[in-house]
Image 1 (cartoon, rainbow, N blue to C red):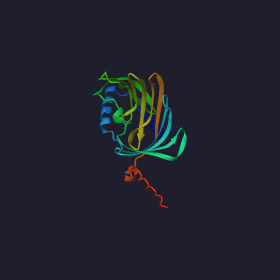
Image 2: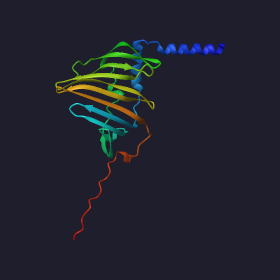
Image 3: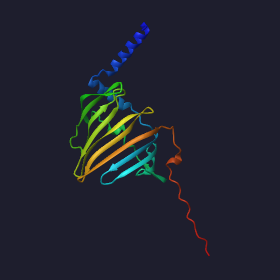
Image 4: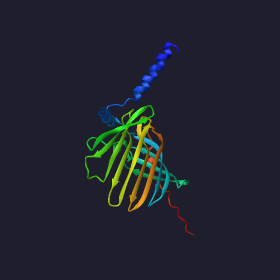
Length: 230
């Protein structure tokens, strides 16, 4: 082995070792807070998702979503695994519900206690127990895994409780086109004494510069035909 090759091998192992070293837990939280402040949400996004529900109501659907700001076009493409001949199109005006902004626990609402690391490819993620400062909340986050590469939440675990519903679940995020987007969410609950499960999987992300205004305009109804007098 030449001297240059030996140096290259040594550098590789040094870099590999550096990537596996655990960072100080408070430093990770500082980077986490900074990453949340600078995280960007796409103004325009197109994606597909599947939703499966088992319990009081059973649902198996695939949707295509077109979003520009709060304008949403929701196309139902299949139901119970059967593609629809005529897709169902609905229009909404509402903010996105499954965002890092909504699910990430922050220091003004939670106490985060470091519990350990988890291997994620060639780097470490950091797992924290989350305790809500408001103990009266019916739903709360109880654990967050912070990605060790960009310091955004990769997995958020939550639970809820009430008179008729108790349950728990988690949502996972990942990187798509420079944005931190949901990958999957799952939940298990007991609703009025009956078990229920739900799972959502997101895919096929695209981030166009814009969408035509017609995307969010319902088609005009066809004029009613009239029968000529006899």
